[in-house]
Length: 294
Image (cartoon, rainbow, N blue to C red; front, side):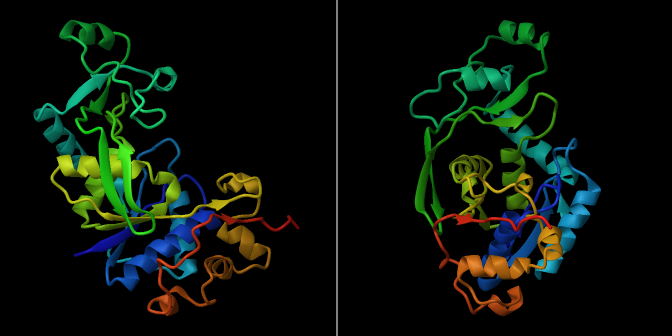
């Protein structure tokens, strides 16, 4: 079954930008006859909280969104993630990396790779060098990427080409990396349409390449414009009353704010299906100015 999804991280309340993306993902899926899954991306155990998950799901329901089947939690899918990593290891497509994040950021990247891409420091270490470095810190596991560029199709941006570097598959602390988990989870759930913020546009070629290596078709992407604050930064809860509860308490209708920003009629999501074309939306970011605190 073809499907779309929304996959929030339960680290706090969703703000109006998150809710807008969720609505768009739901409209894209429902308008094309797809199932719609809700997946909680809770691999970050330090920040993820059950109470945050509960509040997020309640807010999404209040927005008028529904989903098919039970909520799926990424942390419960470890066997699938481990199997994918084992497959890549057995095929010789991985290597141990001992670099810290700071070391990677400070290293000079190759000119054909995206900013901050891994420069290959640990790619060709000898067995003796790896044994020595294991005494200093546990290694992360990286993909031994062979393609320098990869293309994906984006509904709103057309053909998108990006660099593919030796991305992390599993962190040094044993936690599966986001890029691996999201590819495995999308494939296992039959997700062939991914709608998310365009801040993740650069990740799409990497994830599509990884899906290719694992034998999965890459989904169709729709990277939608972000919601920004008055200073042009990505909207965050630090910007004031921006959550469903904040805006409702201020006497505002969060759904109406979102549909107005898209140029859509003020209507419940179920009424918008078939009434609006989800690809016909503003291409510029929505600058949102929260109401002044009471």
